[in-house]
Image (tube, rainbow, N blue to C red; front, top):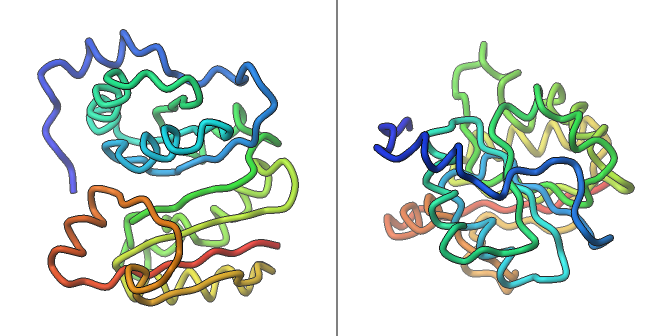
Length: 198
């Protein structure tokens, strides 16, 4: 779902102090959220885990500007962002990522758009370049069809399931919610979760 451009979008984007330029000032693990949306998840992860570095990637600048506004309130030293499609900006991240989060990604429901799904093998190949060591992905979604598709893609590409849930909020799995997750949960929609590695 697209949102209208905030009136102060350009000012926020041009004045952002949190763009990732290839390095952090420490050797802590680096976790990446692809499709950070308005930033609630990645910001709270950074605030709650000061010994981990976080990078949020958002394709749409209008959405990224909302995240920047939130980040500016807290100024975490362990959080950076990138604006763009991960397929086009991955060079900055090659060989640096320990964990990837895919939260409520666009399901691209039509079969002809399957290659655009962030869990398609096309994208899993991109992620291979990003990982520093053992590939590790954590995914959450409200969409059953995307979830089942993702499980098939992970299996086909050699990933193993570490944890899985079809109703995350009934499990004792540590969890920080996204904006979408709060909305879907309030509607009674069960959140699907999987943690995979290879």
